[in-house]
Length: 219
Image (cartoon, rainbow, N blue to C red; front, side, top):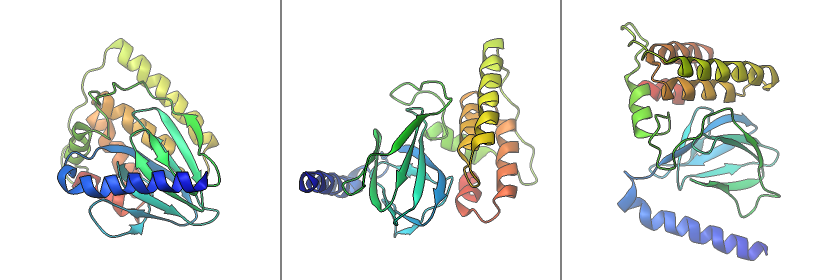
């Protein structure tokens, strides 16, 4: 059984290798790293292996390597779920979730308090091209922040519900778990609340000054 899993995983990696040059621009962002306990590395599609950091946006075909005892949480916003993987494991990122031929077991999965997204990614999200542009356009250093889009009563109720759930997540979150922050950023992006989004990004950069991934979100 393990040989079959390894063979299937190898075929997935081979497929990603052969299609990467032709589809580099089409490769989708599918999840974010929301927590890391231990040591893990990322093998991106367009560069050398590097240490994995929270707030990293991961694309299809990228690979994570987890050392023994390491735990990594991945927030798949389009699916509205979070996966927790435990090392030792090699995890291939796909749109349907992480896949591993050598993990001791499947990931622990729990739901995120997010509204369902259309399968094609039409809704604004920090994992879509529009969402990337939105966070890139939010400058918080010595410039005027953009205005928030006016909200309907339904929008305000939905935002208030997510904020209440985020507050509960923060109470239960372990140190270093940025899952609640990612959920809030996603909801603000979906509702085109760019001023609030800029304020949150500024707060997070100040709280995580060493995080180069987060610092590059506006570049």
